Image (cartoon, one colour):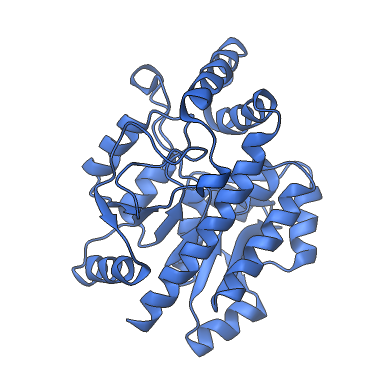
Length: 303
């Protein structure tokens, strides 16, 4: 086997005891948030999951080894390390083979979670079809991963910098259910609503757990998106955010920023244009997703 994977002691114990485990990505630490909010949020999200009775497993590649579960020291080291590569499906073989450091994206985290036998993953928002993709073909690998990897993803919908309509169409084509947790409207990361509807509104963690279990029992390959709106008190205004995102997109285009650099650039620009309110919202929604994700994973374990 040409790769090495290490499970933290906490994750090993959880697997032995049958305790639900929830995967967490690491790009939020290296590319998604500034220091020190990145470390604080990563540790607080892990604690929220533990308080609910589940076990967190932050995933990253350190010196070519896939780590399922990081210590606080490893999280801090990752946050301070220069040149950590965003690790999606395309990048994993190179990073592992060359012994490099990688922070897993949604797609990368799903792959590593499935390798480790973990079925649930909490993140901020999934990637999707970028605006203008009919010309650029800029479509996140997250969507293809959701089509083929059996991991349920709890998120605040798709990032609002994307073309949400085309993202929903792509997921429909790939047979990926988008479940709204207590909502009919697709959440758009910073906002609770968007002009688009989810496929199914489900009101309880138990019902969601049963739906996920049924999907996989039917041998229907691929993930599930559980779209969980940002709490009302933390949400930003939809029309205001649309204006901010339009400005950020125009600046990205003017600076010829493409590919995997687009999302971190846009998130940083949106933070500037909202005077830091978008970062506060980002932190709040990730924590909220951890609470809901833990409830679903616990319900699934009890099925």
